[in-house]
Length: 289
Image (cartoon, rainbow, N blue to C red; front, side, top):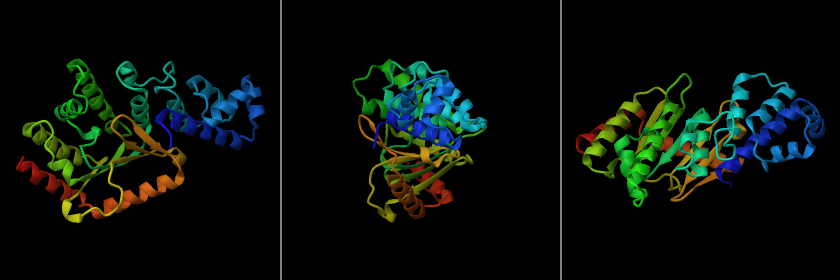
């Protein structure tokens, strides 16, 4: 298990190593072709050093990687996050770098590049589906000492993150919501009513799948905390599980961890209400909000 930046460096390095092997080059040969010392190749491939976008581009050229989607993904993994603030592929969140901790910036960058996300939420509505009012109430509850201006900025970030659900290739988001998320009043009843209505609207999007796990179904597995599984286009080895804690996020990347959480999500999905029944369930709660 590692924190976000280390996860991304390691995964990028592993993929660069795989591509070098496919190109039939030793690390020494690759280093010679780009004019580096072999130790730099080793540090990049083991994740001990962060990579700049320009470095990745040079290596991909040497390895004969022409696929534009793969190149874009690997360049994005090294840019826009905590470990490459000067990278050429800065994300929109770079403008908030003084407010957001490195781990959160890295989480946002992973979210932005993922093709699919599977999430269990047991406490609050996931950030990608929150209204501004709900996001503000959650932020104030979690960080009561934060000045109003910084709360507003964090809400802006939360709403800006939701752009991944739009565009030509939107993130495919599948969320299992524990009933407690819908019953717990966040902010006030007006805020909660607006949030429940927003869930109904988002649930109609083709790229968003919402399922509710009602109290009547019990807890089918031993995992009680929220988690999210990010999956990336074409490279399953980049997949990662993120567990949220009060002050940080924990990243799990071992294949056995990924299999366990993927299996847990399937169990939850199978025990939850269908998409259609879930939307009816949310609407019924909203009518009484």
